[in-house]
Image 1 (cartoon, rainbow, N blue to C red):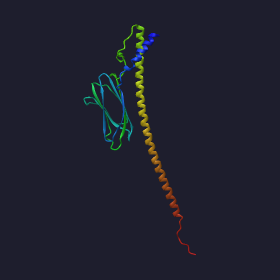
Image 2: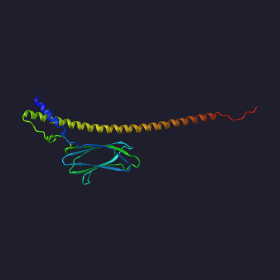
Image 3: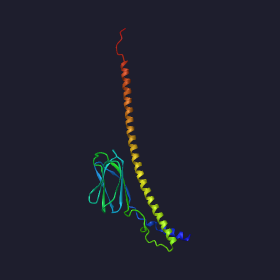
Image 4: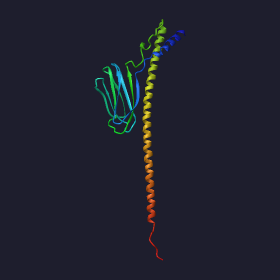
Length: 221
C-alpha cells in the first residue's frame, strides 16, 4: 500500500510536465475580395491535419490552398464549404495555409479551421514527458509506475482528441445556426411580401366589383 501511495504521488507531481500541445484552432472573418494566409511550422516524420469549415456568409464557400516552405502547392480546392486534409511534411519549415474569397465581391465569410499536429512533439508520451522523475528501487514499484504513466498518457491523448471533436461539432452547430437564421429571414421576408400582394389583389377585386354595380345613368320621371 505504501508503494502504491509513493507511485501515485510521484506521477501526480509530474502531471505538470506534459508538453504543451501544438494543435490549434481559429475562427476569423474573411472580407469580400480578400485572401488570408496562416503559417504553421512542421517537422519531418510527422503529420499535419487541417480541417476547415465556412460557418457564415452567402454561398458558404472559399478557395483553399496549402503551400510547402518552398512554395510548392500541396492542396488546392475551389469553392468548397468544408474539407479535411492530411499532409506529411517532407521538409522542415513554415507551411502556408490560405483561404481566398476574391471571387466574392460583396459577401464576407466566417471561417473556422483547426490544425492537428501528430508525431512532431505535440503528442505526449514516453519517458521524456516526466523529466526529473527518478524510478525508485524495486521491480514491482517500477512496473506500477510504468502502468500509471501509460494510463496518464492515454487519458491525456483521449481528452485532447475529445476537445478537438467538440470544437469541430461547435463549428458545425454555428454553421447550421447561421443557415437557419438566414433561411428564417428569407421565409419571413417573402411571407410578408406575399401577404402584401394578397391584400393588394383583394382591394383591387373589391374596387372592380363595386365599379361594375355603380350605375351613374340618370332616370327620368
